[in-house]
Image 1: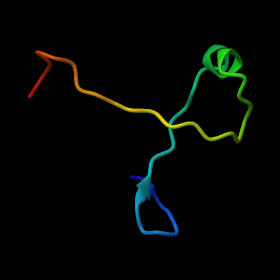
Image 2: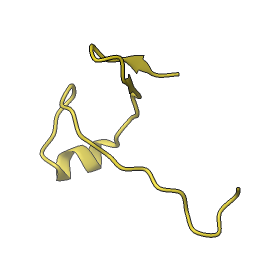
Image 3: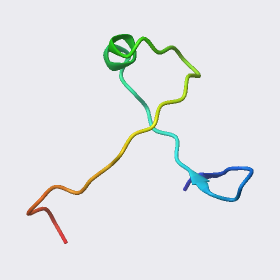
Length: 44
């Protein structure tokens, strides 16, 4: 389940490891954009 934005699109909340947040110079509450892609040859 996701959260609905003001423009009615769905927003999913995922956790980001502290190590990755530190490398990106991000803190709690900052927003990042991620792209999730299926692995080639993965499950169908």
